[in-house]
Image: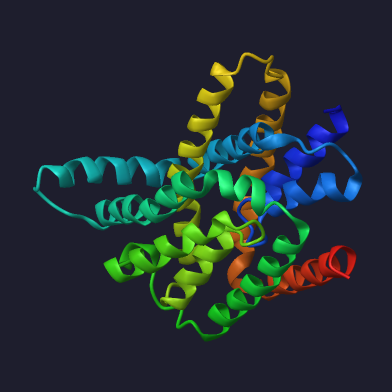
Length: 266
């Protein structure tokens, strides 16, 4: 990978990871549209790790409170709102974790195609528009119940399909269940932490055991660039979300999906 490819892919990952437009789809499409060699899953995971560091840094105070109250809840002494939120993140992660373990090879080899991305981009974009338009938007992430956890957790498992967008589908489910836009986004961001951590850890173990040389400088550079861009993306997205809503992202998804179908399906 040359320097320009590293920078472009890392910035794309950092900007799109927390927007409801599918970062994985963009990472797949860039080499397809530019003629570059596919960067591979190792680089994809590296830039995802960069975004993980960004979200942990951005929500560091909330995460510390959640961790402290979660540990206290294990003693049975009290179950605060922060402890409930921590449990919600844990249980909502289980469906996606199981789906990832069972379907990883199938997704990596059978679904990384522009047509699949186009259909998922359009279909789940319309679903996002529906949830944003019809959701009651009255609850914060600290008022998530077990039914919300089940629905959002199952929705997150669908993000294995390229073009779905993990943040997009979890925000869609959260909005449909009555969370505010900001609460849906914040819970989606918190929910990304265990998923990205698990995926990054597994891929790192594979790289360590791989006898072939690993371009660690490329992976580290990509992680740093994606992390910095993701941090600023989270900040401005949360600032603007209540004002602009989801419609701009829905329109972008529809335009992108139609363009991909026109190029690759007809």
